[in-house]
Length: 240
Image (cartoon, rainbow, N blue to C red; front, side, top):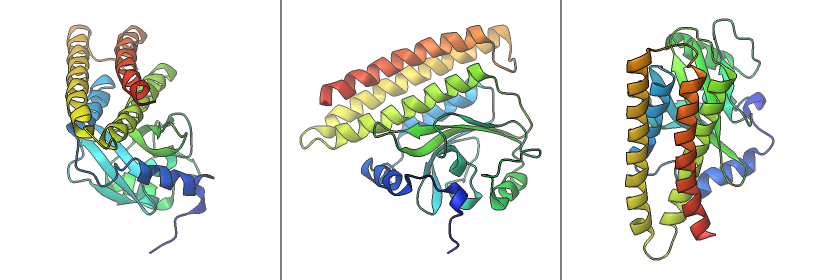
């Protein structure tokens, strides 16, 4: 097994891996709520692919997948998502054929070419312990601009995914009634994310698809994301 390049290892790698194991999400059963999050991300930015990636020691596992079927895992050195955990904000590659970022390994560049990936953006999944366990990413097969306002919305979405992972763990780790806590909350989150996806679909049907996404559209999305954050914050506070 090839060693992971040092350029892909954050300074807190050991602690980060412990955090990933602590939240017990890597090899758990698939949760439909995470599928809803990646579908929403793809819809907001009018892109064909979105993934939730968890970065383990030697591989990247795709916990939710929109638009890239049968892509369940990838060696860490071949995955662009390995670069997102090195940052505490969104990383954006507007045209991978021109990108010179030293964090992109030769294997990752080759995998992107094979899969015809030209645009890639990802925001880290930063947990309450401040460890980045993975990323929420969006992908296109052609170059694309990506505005600072779009980056902020992607970061908001990734923060919600992180909160959902944290709340899920808190619920399921309760000695009594953990599942009874998580199952209705999961259903409520799914409904809220589906409603937001429907709103985005309506906005774009009415006003057309534009790149970058107009600021007023992003503002509407951002307000709804804050509502979701408040819902999750309430549950986090309940277990404090």
